[in-house]
Image (cartoon, rainbow, N blue to C red; front, side, top):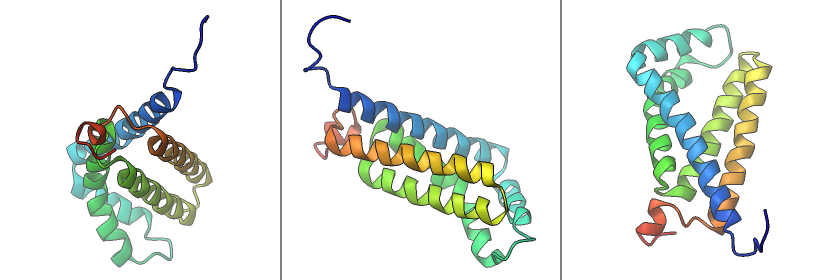
Amino acid sequence: MTGNNDNFPFEAVSALLLRVSLGVLFFFAGLNKVIGGPVDFAQGMIGNFEDTYLPVILVAPFAYVLPFVEVVLGAALIVGLFTKPMLAVTGILLIMLSLGTNIMGNPPTTANNVNYVLVTVAALYFACRDNRWSADRWLGKA
């Protein structure tokens, strides 16, 4: 590539790519759970935690709400609506999922989730710097 790249919006592109990647991941993960039956998903998740010390009273509400939270988070991230708060919530959700997989004794999934936390942090960093390609920007909130 030749020429001067000083004017290329690398931070905006980074924010867009990271945000949309996370959005697609969460949207379709949630959509698959909704289409497959959110009650079946929740019951399966509750069953996965039966042999752990997490009480059902904590697991059940999380399991029933998770598919819908993933769809909403994913859709908001794809279009860039409430980008910064949605990325913060995404990070918190990923930490909660990491805690659960760690308690279940599933280190590979825990490590994978922690990697997604790092991607979320990078997305938030770049969104704070230049979030020009987002619904937030079009609505005058970026």
